[in-house]
Length: 85
Image 1 (cartoon, helix red, strand yellow):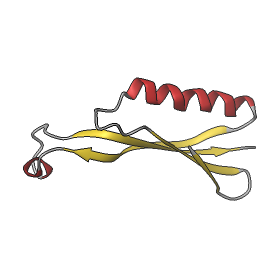
Image 2: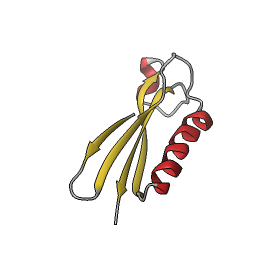
Image 3: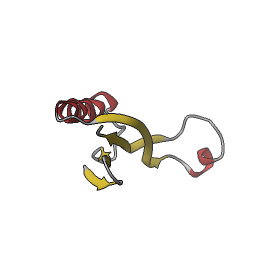
């Protein structure tokens, strides 16, 4: 997790799952994110926006061009913009 100031009363926080080569356990990853969201809300921060995207995918080269289901994410990143009133 890393935190980047984004101007007055705003901060970006990035959360990264561990990459062990296997498929991402999304429930465990989102449990970490939601726990930090709850902690920050108790400190007066509010979620303004959130985005989650694959940081690393594996699969065969042919499947990169076709939606054949051959790829899987082995690492994901969530970016949350927090604001404070």
